[in-house]
Image 1 (tube, rainbow, N blue to C red):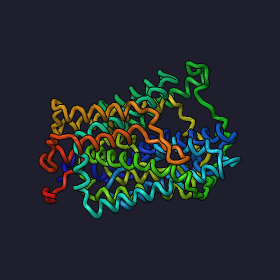
Image 2: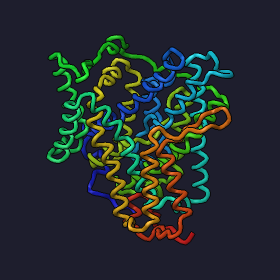
Image 3: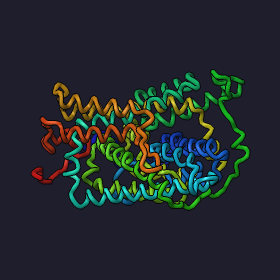
Image 4: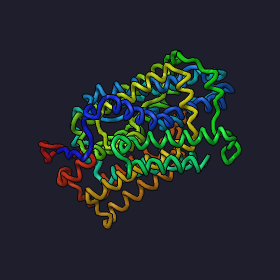
Length: 467
């Protein structure tokens, strides 16, 4: 059963201009993290190969893949799920590993060719999503969700937010004044804002802080470390119109063994994100349109991105935080954000301007967004009445927290000559699921608490609870 909240589910009644602004807010929310992935990946290959990337996993290609991938996801999920797909951080370890390969065919290989093989592994990772989607379609989501009770999913959702906390602090610490201004403006507009301003606090925080940063920069004020607040050189050199530099994926078993297994982590995160979005919106997206459909959309988006030289896609927690703050749950607003991302991918000049966003402002915004995700996880535990006085439940939650937050660099192991890294969230999810399956005293009965279940998106209305 769905339990809609006091929010806006049909944004058309706000009018098209306001919908555009809301879409712009979602675009800003995802932009910083999404373009950070290609920037980091280019750094890996520059360090390992002595040259950066000129095609594939560039900012423009990444924005194009995010826009197209989001629209593909919405088609697969019957246009019902308000999720944005941006570039995944889970695969960064894989890119770093491929960049450092220097034996066999990789000996003396240039950066662009290496990243093409890495993207081939991403294509296969996307295919693994399709395999899991088929399994869920065949055996039913209810049987799968028996392995994901609230004592598992709640702490995992909390970890999703808290695992990003370090990124928020690192960005904000580059200029605490700008970070504080961005955060303060968001809080003020979210609590005391009136009308339209109340539902675009993130955008207002970005704009106000950006204007303040421009004023400080014009006055000759720098960041505390002496660096300039803005660097506009790349903007001056960028063209107004240009095609993203695509690159077809290449396939090799070594790169596939490095990249594809990371799908285990990203699929676990997908399930947690779908629970978080369901809880935020008050609708059961795991039942309708179904987890198999959302996995299908995510997998196709990831495979498509890898095929044309983009990074893997994943549902973005930043945009879930925007949903919670704005209370506008209409998926059409997300699709507008996807179209904005597509347009930006063809405008290098404008894309360059937005990429000048000071890291401190991104950090200030992230304070709120990442915290909101964790707060949703806490709410899920409370609403499902998880009894943490029982040792069994306490052990599961404790292990998930330590794995999710303690393995900050993931866990690396070798399969043959390839090095594979599982992220902390993947380790936490696997540990939680295994402990829940083997520890005695499981008091969770699927469907017994519909109010709690639907808050995490796993209640199946009208379905038998016997099997």
